[in-house]
Length: 598
Image (cartoon, rainbow, N blue to C red):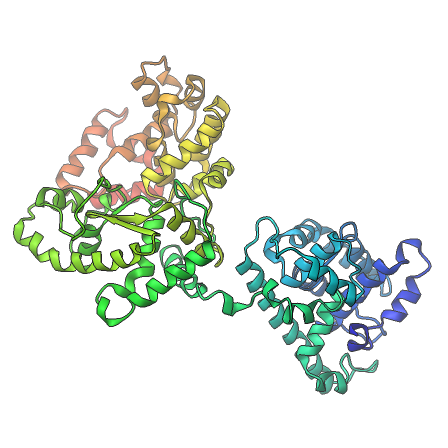
């Protein structure tokens, strides 16, 4: 049917023109040509010569967007699609051939990656692939129906989730319908000499039916009808995923924190396998219940609570500390990410911790029993919200500590992942290249960064090569930016007692970490030559040791003066070395002390 839906694409003429070459014969080449010419025409390619003229822009869109969205390509046939573009370009002037060839060569790796990426699969593309593996004749709707009936359930490809395929299918449906509508309107406003792509009769039957016919032609005959009818449970739509509402809320939280879904959240230490979709629906039900008036004032904060505890690497958080934040109490930022001990057991009713523990949690001296009593009400309200979440089995609250259970960690990770947030598990993060992991870990709480960096080293048996890779990354990732100090600061969370001495000695000459490596060797009682440490590394070590925010300015200035007194050349030479090594951090630390940089 699809071959008659898109008319005047020049397919017959094109196949006749190129039919002399052996590589241009056969049904596979014809199928590739039908898809390429049809999609180019739909996207508005000039058909004045009788066939669509490819442009660099349309070629790039075809290879990287349209084919991965709409077309199933059997194994071994991927190269036919660029070949069709090359043969089509040859129908025009020589510059067209060169331009299209350049785009095809440039996009070839990304085209192949996009066609094999599980994240680009739609239900129709996936089932076409599955049916072909089962031996189905994809051009025979009756055979497609029989093979679907014989499937034992609906397996998923590796690396894909049902929600991913549903979302990609819904998007592909919208894109194809929009393309068909625009093509019809475009031809109606400016009728092309070769005739319209869509006949009035085809449009009268409904754009949706036209899209279905094309989808069948480009995947498997009759597949769309089967997946919309008797086998709809094989390809569930949005109604089967109510928990995506919660996924959207968690995405909003991530964007509020980082502004970019590609910024990774830290991996949990443990994830318990379960039915994540069912658990996500359960969690959504609790979140929606908490939005009711009886759970005010904190019931609406449930998505935030879930996100922030996951963002902590799933280490426990304090109810009292979180309640204090909501009540605008002063909380020492240096304590926000510290793990909270989880007691073995605690009474069911919530009680604010004793005053000394409250002082430790908030970092606020001078608190008394009156302050503790003032926090009791807000903390109990927050504990009630957490207890409702804990009833799902995905969250826990034990005394003042709360967090995600391993199953809850897996559920929140799933919800973040289905909305495109980079949410690795521990094994994935440990397998990342050192530069990628270091770039991410710089934004994680220090205890989490320590755990994940240690995992990376341990999976590589703490070899000298593994340590050197990591140390090199600490000195180069974000170099020259305002994030450089936090990145090299990750050295302090490493357990250097496990580092091979040769790796630390090699780092002595590093212009960023040399002094850090020297200190680590000295603390271990290892032989080290301080002469090898560059001036820049020594200046950075001094800069990083200066108090940047805490304490009165007088004491912070005294700390600088003491360091300057021991520096060759005095304060002017020290400031110059600091500014040359890391101007961003030097301005941040020295500016408040009234010290100008050269």
